[in-house]
Image 1 (cartoon, rainbow, N blue to C red):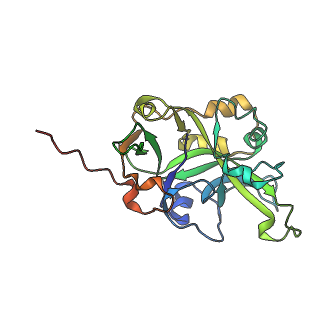
Image 2 (cartoon, rainbow, N blue to C red; image 1 turned 45 degrees about the vertical axis):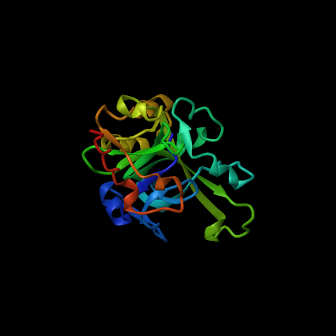
Length: 246
């Protein structure tokens, strides 16, 4: 699964990295090394232009992490829908329409997983990132929920844009830490994944494959990341090696 991740890049940096045509970010989220469910995150998505419906436009915008299905009565459901399993995402009522029409990329420096038990009875957090640097493009879905409590459609609060991270079985050494991992998309697959005119389930599922062996590296980090109140670059710094006993 993916329950926390880091993203320290600016909107301008991400727009360049992902070949974005338009930045739609009114209030940029601050850099975070402890992104948690319900936080505001960056998402890359493709939409049709209003003035030219035949033209697709790649955009960078903010999304709330935790998908609220369009049919939901209570937005609190979003805090529980932070991950969607690749194996069933096209069938689940909460995700299947978004899988067909509203796919996105969720950029990340890396993500956290927890393993085993420490001497204090807590699991050890690991940070997982690209071995050779760069930004991860996690496969995601987004949904637009109309809040019935807001009367005016022109009110920015009337529509909530929310997201979910797709996961799959972890392979290679990462699977020793946790059996699930976010699905990562390489640049040559971005265009097809984001294209809202493609709704072929088999084609879309074929785009989603686990990261190539050796693509990622994992190392233990401070248990400070366990608390969402903690933030800063120190959360992704490797722990110093254990001192030799002899």
